[in-house]
Amino acid sequence: MKKLITTLFICMCTCLYVSAEGYQVNAQSSKQGGMGHVGTAMKLGAESMHFNPAGLGFLDKQVDISVGVTGVFSQASFEDKTNNYKHDSKTGTSTPMFAYAGFKIYDNLAAGISLTNPYGSAIDWGDHWNGAHLIQSISLKAFSIQPTVAWKITNRLSVGAGLALMFGDIELNRAFLSSAEFMGTLPQELAAKYEGVTPLGVSLTGNAGIRVGYNIGAMFDINDKFTVGASFRSKVKMKVTEGNAELKYASTEVRTILDASGAIPPLDQAYFKSELPLPSNFNVGVTYHPTNRWTVSGEVQFVGWAAYQELGIEFFPAAQFSKYNQAPEKNYKNTRIYRAGAQHALTNRMDLRFGAYFDQTPVKDEYLNPETPSMNKLGLTAGFSFRPVENFSIDLAFTYVTGFGRDGSYTDTILLPPYSDRKFGGHYDVHAFMPAIGLSYYFK
Image (cartoon, one colour):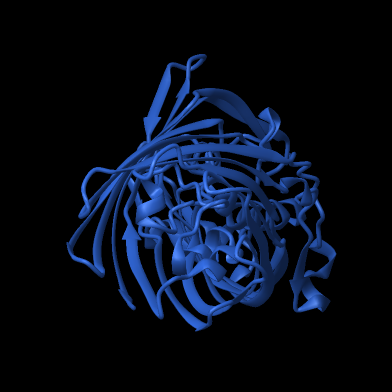
């Protein structure tokens, strides 16, 4: 029973964090979405609050407002060639959004506030598939409110800083018992009826309280052609302090059978808490203006995933559940994301953009599972802006993300005696489509 409860909650907490990692959505601007999401060394007005707060110091409008949303349509596939088994996830959809408002206070001082949705994912493998004991579906939403201030020290140098207030929620569904495990407990006359059916699932929900991080940066014009920039976003430890679990039976008959066995612990009477680190990000970039109509930019994003070495889990009421506290090792590795993009002012009313990025995975082969089928990814982007009037812009972008197919496995413990280890592995592929639309308006 101890291994049953421990395994369940370890899987739950892993999903909460890893989904944020596996789907760390860089979709905080429709304009920059068309340029490979570069922006560390670009003067983006209010939108600089996310990419590099120092860019806000170069704001040349009294008020700059930008809002938008991205639709992320992702799908994953799994194949176990040894057992000739294939399965595709249902198309998951998430809608990260952003809103920025920047204000020029003095010629050399600007401030603003932003609302972004940097973590948001949805994946649904279905209730009845071979990996249901690891994951059926998951939905994650995380938001950041960031007040920001920037100071242009000289005409060429600016620095900026923002305070990031993070909050969010999670919903996870997974099988408590697999169909095969349940079959072994049934009389022969009922086995055929429930073959291939997940008898018992668990729905896990939790809200993370507000946590505080920071975002700082500097930007410098080397000359009229070249600009360099650097920014750092701090690690934030999200806390779930009172997560809940709800058991879901396939039928009343199944519940009667399982209740009679005495094998199901009273999970709806337990709560859990855990700290989940969101990694730091350090970005360095350079922008080049070969002509008045062309802008080319590139950058490297260093993601501090090594902060995720283990996952501490505490259960309460402590008198009943503290003996199940765990700290399993995860041993993630730091990664890099390489980005490049270009913008061409086709006319005075229209800008064209295109770009690409390469995103490394921090997940080692022995930790790869369907909760987040993480792998190296390539993103290709394109977009444009149209200004029907001088101070109003309609911004559109499209991103296609494809994963480099990967083999891996994950080992967990069967939830029934003799509690032996089992390995679930195979070949994973992922891809996603990300259309985005934004509107921006400024006051001189």
